[in-house]
Image (cartoon, rainbow, N blue to C red; front, top):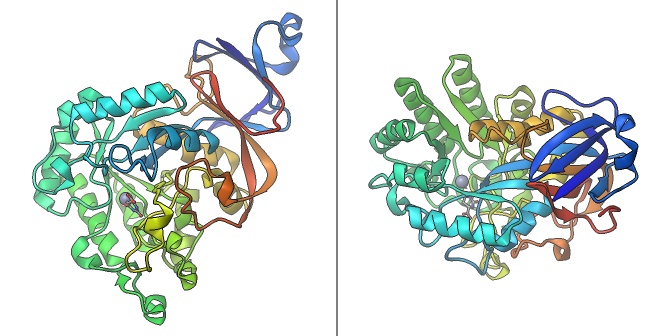
Length: 438
Ligand code: DOR
Ligand code: ZN
């Protein structure tokens, strides 16, 4: 099947096309890119190929989300591979990497295969399972990294919690290097976090909620940086939320230590004051922090200290979230609001450029996870493409979410910039209602 994207202003991480281009896609790959004015008459007359007119839109390499929770197997009432894939496509993501804190935990090849098979059956976006670092995420013994790699994992994580035992983490790093898989650390020392439900400080005291101190994150950030330095290996730090963590990562990078990091949209958008409403949809791990931290995360996304943006899409049912603040589960959905938040909070205020948006959402995650045929629009690359309307304003409405869960603290917000179409492996997997073409 072939597809033709006409009049595209192509945004790559290192270059934006000055004149409109036509992109010809065949058998899932980008076959040819030509200036729209040079397109042969025979093709521009239409012919047999499907086409999308991208006039006035920005055409970017499909976004890659290194951190989502799809809840299957185990909590299909919150999300499934099918509903999560649909949410990803609507949010402009062509690849999602799903965390292993499912039930059972993704800690063996059979579960990896089952997820890949289901994703294939659904046939919307690329779903790449992340295996657990420790068996059952129990922090006791390492999982079989070679088996997980062989089955299709590119990364391993005990996300939801840290690998607390430093010796176990050291061994994990040594094995991960041999197995050539990326380790992703969730930085939060459970002993320091205790039963904290929000950032520890003045606001938690005022609200009468139990605090989780920032040092719970930074001790793990610092430890993992030290281990990566000592072993001369690499580590990826998930959902960084603090100014102090940014400073540690910046220092580590200046020393040549191979650390990469991600930040979630809610951590550059919301502060701990969001909890004043006691809306449990604002409850998340790591917690929302202060204005100073939000500013530092934005600065780090601008200067590259934080390499990429990942949503930490964490669906929970209304029933579960209806509990009081202390008992509600941590997490919020993020796939369908990410692009709007990135454009509204970072691109529109000129904190980052369009090209940097592509770097943080496509090129960097592709590089970090070794997806070398993705993250760029050029001839020969895989045809994973997202078409963006940079100007369109829209309201986040509960009824518009296609994710099975609706736990978003952004409902009611107006965002600028939206996804017009998502193309995965050369197939249109999402097209906004009312968009002409096809
Ligand atoms: O808020 C969170 N929710 N943070 C995590 O690390 C895990 C996630 C979940 O699985 O719900
Ligand atoms: Zn996490």
